[in-house]
Image 1 (cartoon, rainbow, N blue to C red):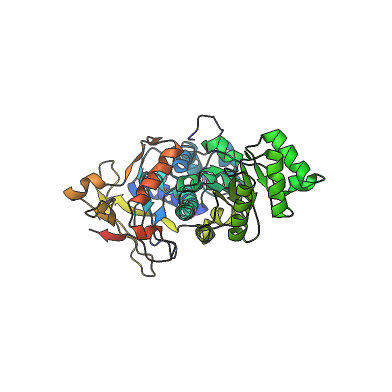
Image 2: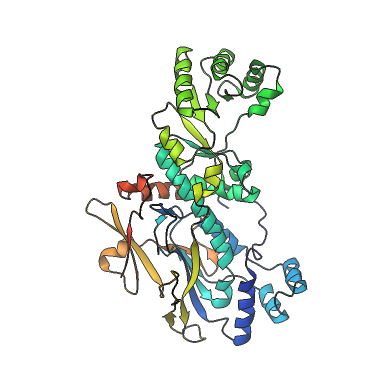
Length: 439
């Protein structure tokens, strides 16, 4: 985990599909389970209309791989369910990943074909990790991509992640983490704050106002408890009256008001004018209410200081997965530890072709330093690209070597996005902003 507080992490070994274990059993019987292999994670295409992808979840992958172990209760379940035979269960009892993981660092952008993760080791230890790795990267990268587009649309105004009630409770924590990587500044989810150190925010809902005999009583209670810097929700009844009451109760130093319904563009202008007339010129306006990147962009000219986003964010704003796949690209020609690797790839038709071979990736810039192509190849790296390789070591001999604070991934994404062509920041649909070149 990225923050210093210890949290018990359960085994991730059953976050997998049964065929991973049946392949293992068959490979153990055939004597091929211990052949060296390399698997790569990539996507053949970006979600329709998206111009770039955002890699998120890498830190969670490291945790998942290190905690992928078959404890006695899990082995008992597999035995009772007759998923695999006893020799396979004995092998699983001692399972620890001992291989190597390389890939793009978290927060980096990617494009079709980008080898965002490479897992090297024996077939037996690598094949078991397919489902859990894809589960994490497909979910988190989808959320981060949506968050990045919203961050672009917000043009520097803070974004609050508040989608916990719109998704599974565990997915909510992962979504908050991914949103932070993509550019959000805070979350309403305390579990995400505890686990990852993401700043948390929150004040009150309509229920708090409805609890009291009057809106004034509710505002007085909140200000007494939380201070004048709090955010008062002003659209439970009449917005104009609520803003007047809010300033009367908290004074011109009121921290913020929140608007959660109505024509946000129109209401924000009216509220800003009213706050200024009441002397509350520094009181901020926060808007919520089913926002997405397009709604945020439509409010660019509105006097809005921050946005709270829920449902559309935690569902990937229409694209809840990145369609990443985990494919073997190389295997040893023999069983020994020094047997040479040979490229392998699926060749059948149907739009699912893969390219064999262990790949490197680099991003070539133009004369102004702006990226112009994602270059992917096997074998020797051209000298002019040797200083622009994208992959780094993430695990060696089964141990994570690239853990970092979440802020580092967030900063990396902003820097990578700033080096993309300007068209990457447009919300209009189109082809990937960088072409992929294979050499």
